Image (cartoon, rainbow, N blue to C red; front, side, top):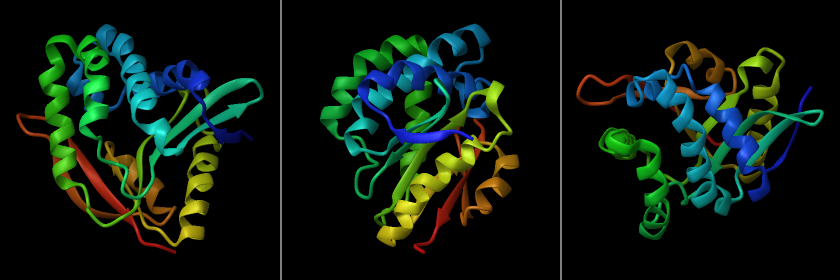
Length: 200
């Protein structure tokens, strides 16, 4: 079973690599990067930029290890911190433009659509959770989920996430999340399932 710890800046390369592999077959990522080679190249760089410039500052980035190997990661934002500030966006913009290139408009459209549907009530936001495909099925994702949800329960705080795969909805329901709506990316984009977990 994996152990979970809070990630530091030195963990960003390993974390980004794990999440990059985990999201290669994600419907949203496939839509943003239809070319598989471009997707494999861009995903780790995208996750590194978001983690380094936004998520780490909130103290909600966790890394799962199986021995010396990073096998999973979760990017959480604490209550009131899910929205990127103008300063954060400005710092991140050069990295994001390099990552997306001519697809930057598509990435922005996804972000704006998700932001418009985001609940305003204070909550912990699970932006991203993923396990290395080679390590799936061993319970590493459960360990990551329970680690932060235990804190949510101590704080009596609700939690929110978007599932980009309908088949993952029952998995999140096992942790107390319920579907509150569907988020459809415009212009033929995929559907995401908004999920909310009441304070325990």
